[in-house]
Length: 77
Image (tube, rainbow, N blue to C red):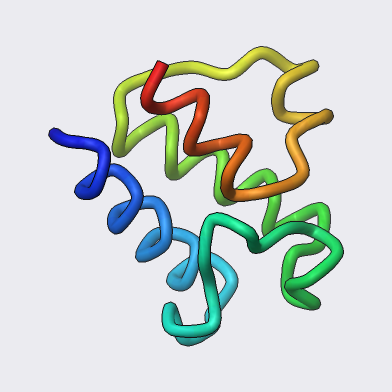
């Protein structure tokens, strides 16, 4: 999967979990800019990302990540 596909899939998953239109999301989206991004949605997002991308995040990563760009950077590195 190339970086553009990863970005698209991340935004699509986020839209599904947060129940928002994906056109309102970008890598700049964060807990501060998306009202639907509450603690429960945050956990659901990480569970889905771990399943879809076959990777794991530490508790500290999950706790400290606050934007789609931060998640994206973890996915491509």
